[in-house]
Image (cartoon, rainbow, N blue to C red):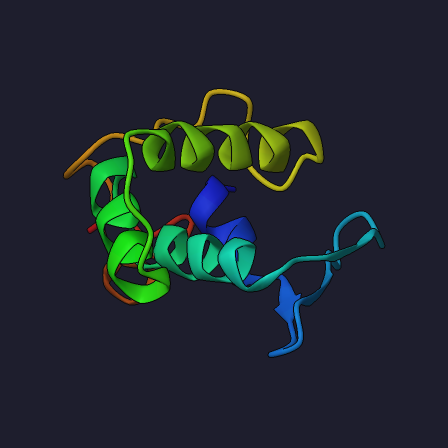
Length: 105
């Protein structure tokens, strides 16, 4: 199962409560974490996510991309993304456009 499909299967509330149906684990995210999680689900890359965060939260600085990468590492550490997940521009299609597992198209 791809990492992005696994993200799609998470139960995420507007308040930041996250339930992983595969492990039974629960997590709490702040607004920034929620924004990153949603952007990952859309297939956005690091610079796209950082740009969105900068405009949404009116922050600036080069640390935003590093913060996004750190958050992805935390998702990997909690097995919410595969260890080999690549967060590069243009290599991820939005979940709504991806073929289902086993679909040969």
